[in-house]
Image (cartoon, rainbow, N blue to C red; front, side, top):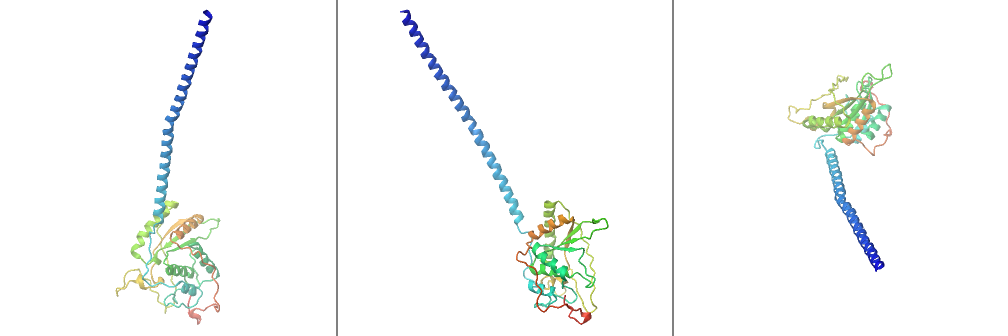
Length: 305
């Protein structure tokens, strides 16, 4: 009887221990599953917040890109403009088909170095000149005149980087000068707005301030040549000079930045892309057949270029 009671007690104890162990394991698994389930919404919500932040940032960047891509400038279409082939012809000293493309009192004919800079400017979107590019023999700058006529034919602002000569110590007293002329757009009422917008964009992109540009023009022409420089206002007959006059008879609307050589090229490239000045298909100019060194009017020539 004692042996039976001991065996019954052991069996009951073993069964009770197994039941308690099973309940304990069930509670632990339930607790671990519940804790894992409680952490799931937190990770999901964190991921959702991250995705929302990325979407907001992407949308903001897209808005900024769209704003930067918005064209803030226009060029007058219903007006007199030269043709690009005619501008190329007078740069070689040849007569243009369209009248008033060139003038005897305004030199446009380029020498070898100026031709190289002219072709490079068409590919880069802005012109690079040494100093003021003034030629004392011609009493003017044929390179600046030809490039301004080219930009007038295309309806684009003229962007010129004036690279200053080094001083005796190997550096320069001042930085290079990057000049923008808006007169080829032929919309004088829009000049101030476009200028302000352009200054703000350059300031935001490169953190440089523009400065007031004082133009000092020296014009040396024959007494029989009369070049009328107009201020852009309507004349007495009521005609709009910006619609009918050639660009060399219209005053420039220029402003500038004083920059280092490297920064000047960067800003010049930025502005060239902004105004779509780059000619991707432009190649080096080839000298037309039959073109010979010309003579000025004082020496029996036509004085073209």
